[in-house]
Length: 74
Image (tube, rainbow, N blue to C red; front, side):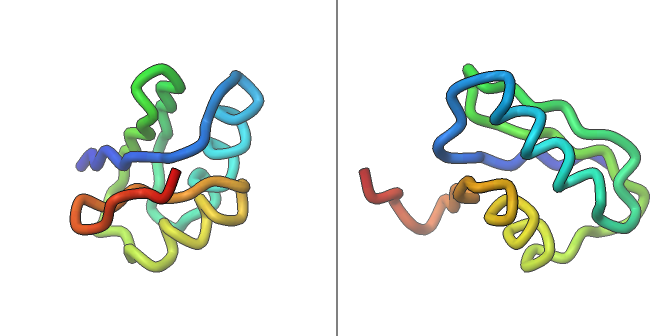
């Protein structure tokens, strides 16, 4: 399975690495592809991911998980 998440606040390769490293620690994650320009992280996983765990990993990396039901504060 693959799921793409919007990640707010990424601006560089370091950002991508930080997000990738944190998401890679989640159980079941087989790979992470971060696109800084698009502001997304596509996660390949073998089982459904816990949304709270995904958000916690993104926050731990220092960024915000975008949500379609909530506009980001700029």
